[in-house]
Image (cartoon, rainbow, N blue to C red; front, side, top):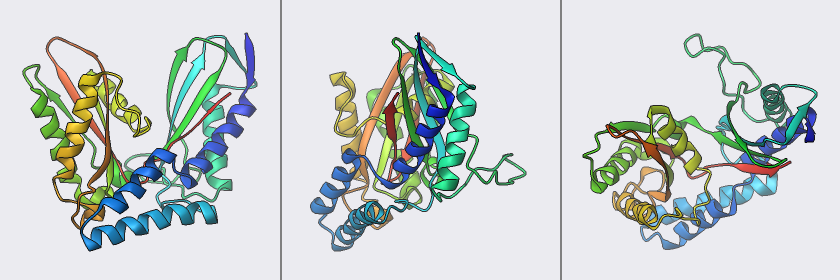
Length: 280
């Protein structure tokens, strides 16, 4: 049994909140850069070049890459041979989020009640997803989620009669409804299977997979490519002004489902889809 202190978890989460909001992962940076080179319309190319510069400026100045520093979504893979000492795991995560957002001067966007709308002033509570795994380590991933794109996400409970093309159409329809609201070029995380909440979680997890790593199943890797091609034919383009770069990538995660259902969720991410990870 390996002991990991709640204080270490708190400090790690704090650092990941700041890192994720300033430094984009290489796959996203490369996708934005490549899109800026491939755009043919002058305005679309100019916008993509501005996005490249914005990413560079954020790193250089150590400032958030977007003013919406998001609601903190935390994925934790906790080894069964880990004993957390000095406090509860969820408390440590929320203390880390509070520390990271206040000391890192990140915008606090969370309200304590969905209808009464009073800001908590430290961006807590976080959305926490924990999974027990083998081993004596903890993998922590912080994925700040801005709500310009989150608000455009959708779920549909298809019947089992739905075809491959119907799912592609739903992904395209979601992108078309999002248009400029999602700050394109978008990243589209797609969950297929499970039940109502599971497919939404799969879609959120899909946004954390690097864009240069396709689904391990060739069938779904092809669906990712087909969906990306179809979305980019919509001509929504960077920031909604038209162009080839409506989406940077489509990532699909799947799970077994019930014989009577086929849930599909699309979690929309903006061009600064963010996540940072650490293994303790």
